[in-house]
Image (spheres, rainbow, N blue to C red):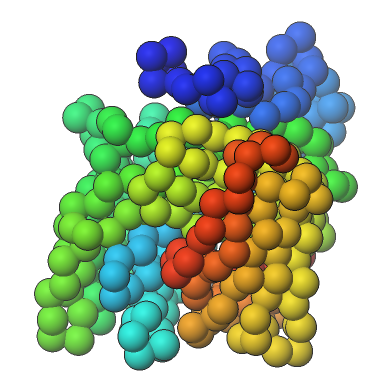
Length: 341
């Protein structure tokens, strides 16, 4: 991490360590920057578990969210240890509906793989009979994204060279042994998506990255919110990782946030949500435009989730005594998710 890129508020968080584990112990905390690699092999608690446990409980995923004036696009590759999966979707903001909703499951390492490093340092890919998705970093500080199915062709590049400071959170998740996640705020996008006979530019869009790697509990649940545009963004989670990954980006500064509270009606997830943090730095209302959802129950696993796409409004502030900054029409997502994996 180039120290010249860090602002005074960013300096409030320490720089990322070289490793998530040192001397057999987890280097828990919130940091600015990223790890070159996530390696749990030296963790004392992991060594005490059998190989089959480590393999089955090692979860890795990469998620990219792209927002444009007309679309929200979500893309993810997930390595569960015992299988690999991927999903991607395109949501039309004006029509309030999904234009494409794709997902697939395959064998680990044969159908796909997620690197142990953040996307800036590693590669993630998935391929199956009905489509393929690739995240590929390049030496010119860009991340290339390719997604192709019978319905869609997306080709995009994210500018990693000028991204705001990224958040690294390391800690012990509920019921698990260790977790590390890298989050970024708004990244410039170049590219296009061909869909329903149209080729639409993504050049006015901005993207955020979520690269996560952990030894997690078999039963894991969370609520999540994320929204980003130039100069402003946030990531919030309530569930298995506590408040570790809660952060606010303002004008290039990254500010750690307290515990996040999600208030919504699970029976009516497309009604308004209220989200706030207990430190008083974030107080928002979320108005869903539509959602992607699923409820899969397999013999050995299950996944129930809803991920609404919509607009946030309310206020944020960089410190308790700072003036509130109003937010309007900030595009993003929320999620209510429960997995047995």
